[in-house]
Length: 227
Ligand SMILES: O=C(O)c1cc(=O)[nH]c(=O)n1[C@@H]1O[C@H](COP(=O)(O)O)[C@@H](O)[C@H]1O
Image 1 (cartoon, rainbow, N blue to C red):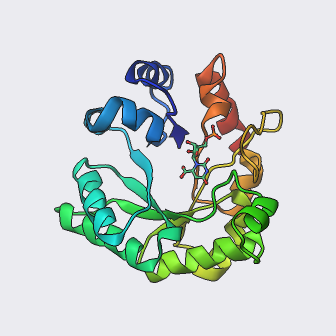
Image 2: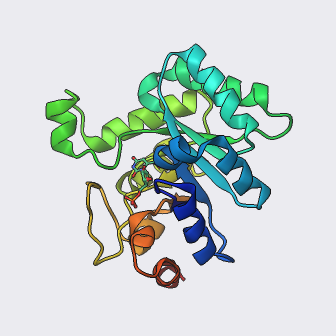
């Protein structure tokens, strides 16, 4: 999944152009969605892309239900909520998605702990006494209980999530960094090959592709590392 983290539709279009023909999901996050809006997402779908709309819903259940319905009407393939919103909120997201989808609803997943969060922040800032792995698995269980399809986590937690939830429960993993790439604001990272070994279902990759002089070549070399 390529993270289209751009300030405008025009820049996103350039990336789409350069990656033409390579089968991958396009992830539209807050930066691009707030600039280019629902129309851009609809256009991606019309052009045949698989779309993950990453807006990380986190609000009271009624509001999330409505937002999930609006998102589902755009025809996206996947969207996410924050597991920290609780089981009832996640159930509401699913209800909204089902209500608005004539046939198959989008895949609905929950963000566990952001991949920018480290153990120190978990303890000192968020006041959580459990380890990162325990916290992520706890959220995965809540998401599973609510009926969601999977979670967003770092690749470091995939094995534990699959042990706890079973193989079909999806893991979507950002925090992917090829060996010489800068970690930037990511804390919990693995290389693409390491992440593949964990059995993760989808990798989300942004700057190691989008911030490179030749994004197509960057993506192709990641794919080569995996096959
Ligand atoms: O939900 C997400 O996609 C997400 C969750 C998370 O915990 N960490 C995370 O990095 N992401 C997103 O994944 C992408 C990672 O981008 P890069 O760090 O540039 O590879 C960004 O678009 C983030 O918004």
